[in-house]
Amino acid sequence: MVWTVRFSVANGRRQYVKRHLKFVERLNDVHERKVTAKRFVHQYLGEDGVFILRLVAHNTNTITVTEFVDALWDNFKKKQMVGQDEVDV
Image (tube, rainbow, N blue to C red; front, top):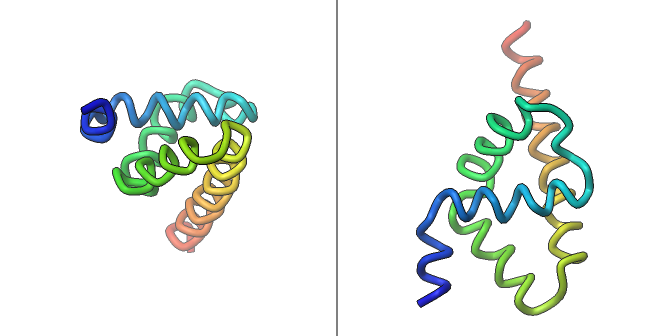
């Protein structure tokens, strides 16, 4: 029952991922904490991505999940930069 609630509540998914991003000090300004983190969770990871992160956390530890989130954040930011470059051209 707890997994169902965690999976279905959007704010819970966002807070879970933001907590891991804060561990590695990736949310540097207000815009990243609010807008970019929300886009990262909802558009990039989606419900399935956060669910997989929770499964990994359940079977490993917080450090492993934080490293995954950190790597995914880097990939997301790179794709975001490429998208901006295409718009500028």
